[in-house]
Length: 328
Ligand code: UFG
Image (cartoon, rainbow, N blue to C red; front, side, top):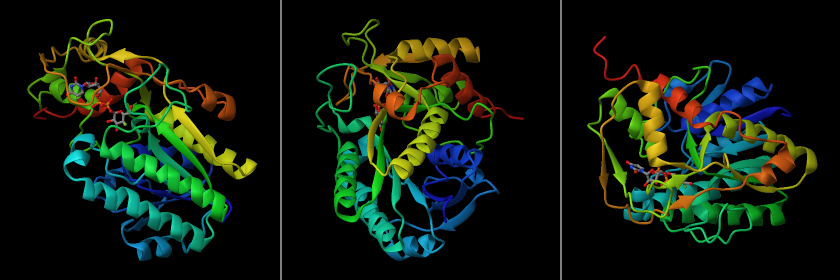
């Protein structure tokens, strides 16, 4: 059906924000999720649900029977450290799972795919800001899985006429500014949620990985992008590939570099909590600085980050964490 979208991984952290944005734009949405990391609290009554696993081809063809105009694929394991210890798990879910999705899409006549890729495909940057023409050379297995999927998409476009948008997210952060997402990401591995756990008192302190980088304050600098901005880009990318019948490869970032210390100080100010922190050794594989340019997304989609200021990232995340660690 013309307006129906299957969101694979739609109960997850980013997926649920994408579902919200699609519903708001008038799409009919069905969520496909196995709830391994997705949360039932992230489901919306306006959206349908198909429980299933991308590792099972039959689950996907059954889900796609309804007839979809497009699918958004965000179902992936994403813990960088774990991907280096258990590559098989990442290959099976992220890569083989995507092969199943693409074959099911072709068999079911779904022509448009928006894919959740990552700036991890670039590896250590050779120049900044990183644009889409920067060489790809992932430094971890997680990033490798995202790159392999981009390559699969390229060939399914060429051979099967499947149009796709591969969206290379920089550091996804924040929560819906209107508080409509209820499920907190479980076992978060990223900087801002870790700072929030320390602020809420459910983690003793933040360990800062290195203070001797060649950056302004010696700590790592990243391009943090609000998930609601990411979600908006998905809706625009979907409309674009369907209307223009062409595929897209786009960076999505805020184009602003924020250091660990700036994030921490902003969090201390906004939460009013002391947030204990300690410097420790650098984490293996971390570049000093990773900032992207999203000029292509702006030009092609008319998209720009609107919620990605550091204050907004911290405030919308704190709203989710503030209620934790309280006895009431
Ligand atoms: N950091 C700390 N202490 C922590 C966690 C992180 O100091 O406990 C620092 C890191 O060293 C880095 C920054 O905070 O300088 C951000 O680290 P994250 O782990 O939050 O994010 P990464 O930049 O390592 O990676 C993230 C996602 C990847 C994605 C990448 C794209 O986890 O999946 O952004 O830019 F590919």
